[in-house]
Image 1: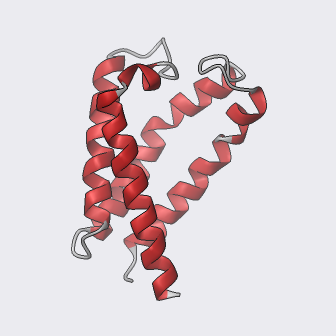
Image 2: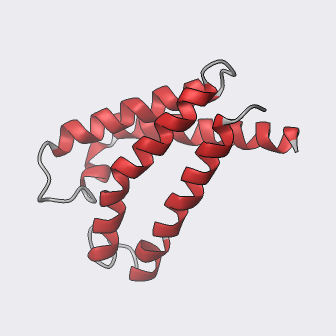
Length: 122
């Protein structure tokens, strides 16, 4: 079980770092699903990207993994309105199908669960 957990930590760290960098290189992609009624869209994209990179790196370091896990939990909750907005538009915000837009929502719970699991000792 320990090796499986370490593998998931590396995979999730890579995912968060990669997607976090994408917030800076392709911010318009994320702005598509940023709810238009919320202020500071571009700033929010950059801030969330920064924390995705930071927490992704912290996941790889055993001494900071606990804080990374809890930071990711907070971050995933904070960005959930974007996923809800995408589902609310039935995928139109990103030109994807309604099934994909709505199907993304449960994955947030899975990612929160993984972040919690990763915050525990390996």
